[in-house]
Image (cartoon, rainbow, N blue to C red):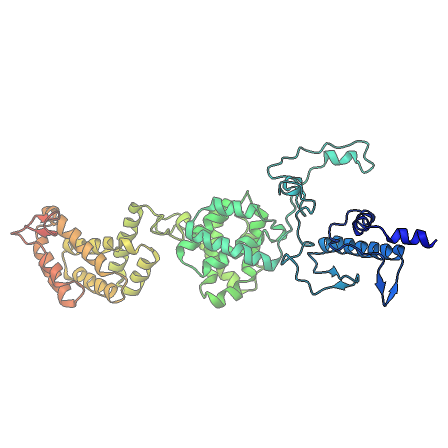
Length: 463
């Protein structure tokens, strides 16, 4: 036995290195050859024990290398003792666990499923889906669904929503005057039981407005009847107006007379029956309602100066023909010449709502002075023009334009009125002294020596 042992230990160191290298199965990190036999704490160990320890160390290193490559992004690694170490700084600020790229190193970096695999995505961009065919074998299939017709249901308006919705429509109508637009807007609403309240709202707003607004309201009621409103709806509307007259009269003192004119106009437009007024005889206790019905009865039984009831409100200047405006102004001056009421003349002129056409009144008034034979008309027209000037009803531009029109036509007027130049010079001088025409306009007044008015290229002067 001693001889065998000695022969085993008599082998060369090179042979021992080769045998040890073969047992470690190609470990590349094993840089030092294991010298067997080894001495531990002064004792000699056997060769089998040393080989076992070398295998354990190689196995631990392989485990360390594998875990460090797997957990390099998490900052976790194993020490030589197999313990976890969390003090290692990760190679990526986000960490590989938050990285959406493939860890296998495969692919070209394109989005998954062509961009159609994300959350909330229905398909690739630009993809068009065909209509899904109904499967008759589907347990939820209902044959009646194929014949269903789906419609949008609009809830009827209550009183609060009605006021907020319809009031702007009527106010805008007073600006544009297009009844077709109002008709289209109302057809898109489900008025329900509030249908008969539309005329009440329109008339209430018109009472607070101008005469042109009342004329537009009468036209609106006439156009809505038969399309949005029925004759019964119109009658109910006027019943409500007569009932609310005491409250309306608080804001508009002339409400009873105005409502009576609305009733008369509605009867003339055939949207209210002629027997409507007669149905109230002996049944009205309210004083305001009796005044309104009495006003309507008077208007229906007489002619207002040759004007029909369709002109009971008059018409705004932008909607009335020029010929009709000229007739209104001529009638205004004749009534003033008879009555001499300056306030009434001013009121009638403002009701025409034609501030851009006031030069016609100045022109007509001066011509009336030239054609008159006495001093009465001369003094009354002076007083009228001065009053309209001081109240700013007639502006400087309109006053000058009216006199310039007379200057241009005085040669023709002179043919019919021989004293036209003399009266014109005296009238213009009086106007200048009273302060409602300027000195430049007075100097332009024509005389017998300069009868031709040059309006082009000479600043509008006479020669």
